[in-house]
Length: 179
Image (cartoon, rainbow, N blue to C red; front, side):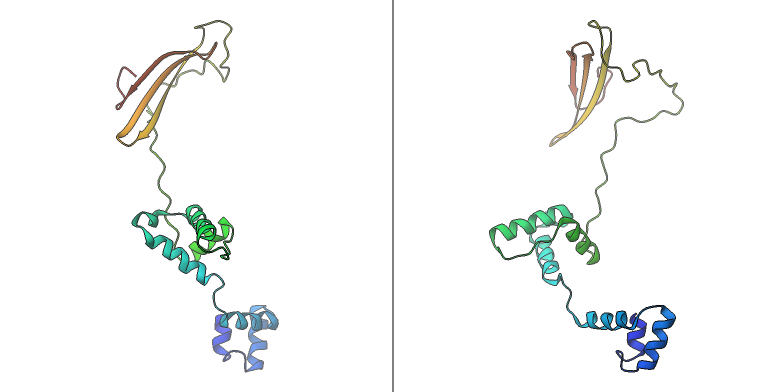
């Protein structure tokens, strides 16, 4: 459509408009609607300026995604500007993407389990049945990684399937033979 608008001097030469519209399979009405929209200001221009202000307020705000930006906009509406219209969160995400304000997603945490391709696979003895008729008939173990301010903490637990009683618990900052 931009090619038509530039070629036809904003629609004053009607013969060319009819030809280009028929070639591009667009209606004349759609073309004139496009020209009308060119002169309008961007609908969310004030909102984009407010989002840029939120991002520049603090050095940590540059990692904000659309969810946090939406929450910050709602907070501004509730505290400072009660007449501010805050669109839905997906609309905020679309506005941020269109204006290059969206952030890269952080990479998820690295898993504990590293697959050993050469190791022999264990048989699935429980087959999803974690109930037991008597104590110590089925016992399971799990290792969980917990991120903390001082680094990672690993928690290993041994549990009886009969009554979910914890038989053993170990915590350490490294995975060792004791866990």
